[in-house]
Length: 312
Image (tube, rainbow, N blue to C red; front, side, top):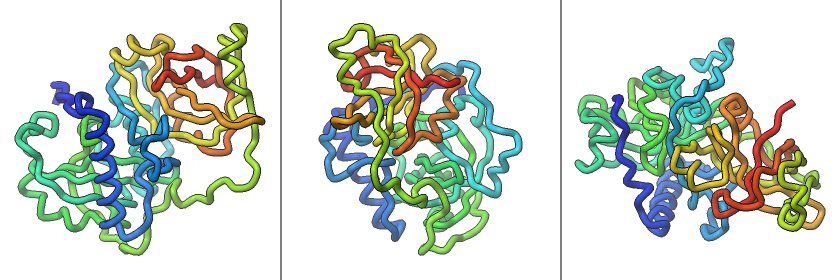
């Protein structure tokens, strides 16, 4: 378990990764019986949109004193927020957690070439979305030869106990989790509670700093501004390669693609989080106004401006 998995997905062409992600979305919609968007706040009808989740990649990062989950939070009852695996790297590995299934993909055999990253016991896999009070996140659920017969039990509404194997490295770089048991078979007409079930922000959104000013005003770089969030993408992990190739501040652990709304429109940006800030990433969404430091006018994913979350 201590050997890092190969990262074949990072070497795939962008076209093949877009196709792979779309297949996941199609499978989840078909099998779950409900309309679930597998990418948070993403317009999946426009895969060419810069910053769309289909064009995102993930990675790994050696642990940097991760923020700890609140001790009083009982995930056995509420369901585990799978995004915690990425904002608290290393903390949840080899623990058992409850996944409230809000979407389930198709069961597939694991190719021999992928055996090393899934482990020698794994024979089948499927993409599942786990819902919790704080939000929802995808995982790559694997089965052994002895547990594969339980795969049909993993349906929308089911409570499935899983063991966390890896923070990323699965299909589309999802966390890899292993099936332990089905605690309860759910009602297929009901999705588990979570962020997808909360009302969308409607009406007039707030406005904040116009990021275009950073392109023409050198004084904007290094300043603290407000970003009125109109889109928040998936939380990703950063590795050493990302830090070397991007204009990220030293020690950044996580990132997400966001849009900041201003009086004349919206601008894309790359928002990064230090380890002590990482839990805050779970709660950033459309309609929020956050304080950010302008790190760089370019150099983020897709060469977006790089912003760093600022907390009081």
